Amino acid sequence: MYQLHQSVPAPDISAPVQNLDQPLPGATLSGETTVSGWAFDDVMVSKVEIMIDGVVDGAADYGQPRPDVAQAYPNFSPVNVGFTYSFTTIKFSNGPHVLTIRSTDTSNNFALSPGVMVTVAN
Image (tube, rainbow, N blue to C red):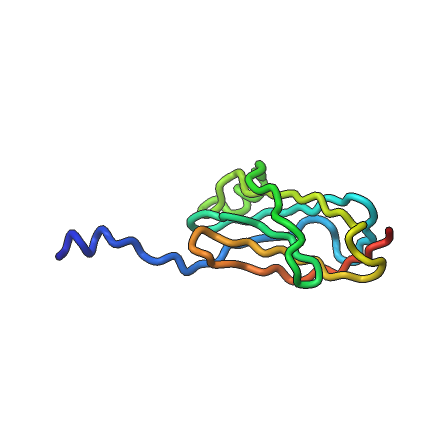
């Protein structure tokens, strides 16, 4: 019984930690714009999604080097926690939109960033 208890892993209940670096709040976007930032988890991030007005636009390219994040969180963050996403404004109407990121870990815990207000100008 003791060995069985030792072999059962603790459940992962922690959501990822994340940050949206670009675009900045209030930015005006046109054409193709890069959305970037970082996300890490106590186990592993499985995906980072970019959302516009609460709807998923697509999945970011995750796993890029971010040594600055690893330095800021030395006990938690591996180096390859950066993400980028090529946001195409032509799919959206001109005017204000809310951009958010949703990071999900391998246990389906997720974090939703505060919305960043941007303006699309096609």
